Amino acid sequence: MRLWLVRHAAPCVLPGCCYGRLDVPADAHANDHAAAALRAALPARWAGWHSSRQRAAQLGQALGDPPAGPWRIDARLDELDFGDWEGRAWDSIGRAALQAWVDDFAHHRPGGGESVAALLQRVLAALQEAARLHPAGDVVWITHAGVIRAVDWLSRQGGVLRLPAARDWPLQAPGWGQWAVRLWPPEPTACTR
Image (cartoon, rainbow, N blue to C red; front, side, top):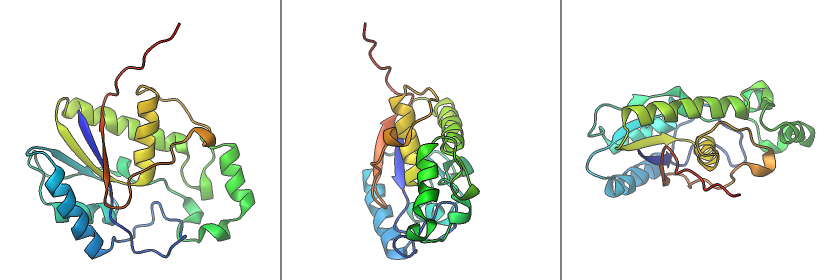
């Protein structure tokens, strides 16, 4: 399966705001621009999934119906839930709270929300299902930076659920309205003796 990991267009939030599950819209102009660019890059046939957040749904609507059937709305593609941190400025959260997350990166629930371990479990389940349903096709996921980083982490692990430390977590993700293409299941890694 060739997986198109598409990040939603720029959201309508203040800079420096913590948002994950917070259901904010995308900027309409940025959304239309992202849809046009993606439409020009996609192959003739593809299946489409998007997260349950409106900023992802907006890009799906602007892109149009997938040739392989209707959009699948899947909450497993939602961004990490930051609990009580949602909607707050990152600067107001405090160093101690952020350090607690760094110290127990995989299991800590930032703001009382969701752990990275839970994010990885749901993203892996969605990956396995998508590969089963579309074993040799193109699948578009309109999603969020955290989910894209989770896919990258899982790919580095050969598709096996291993939990990261904060220092190991992928930092790169496509910009708003941009995408990365990955093969799933990932290519097996070479063994060393």
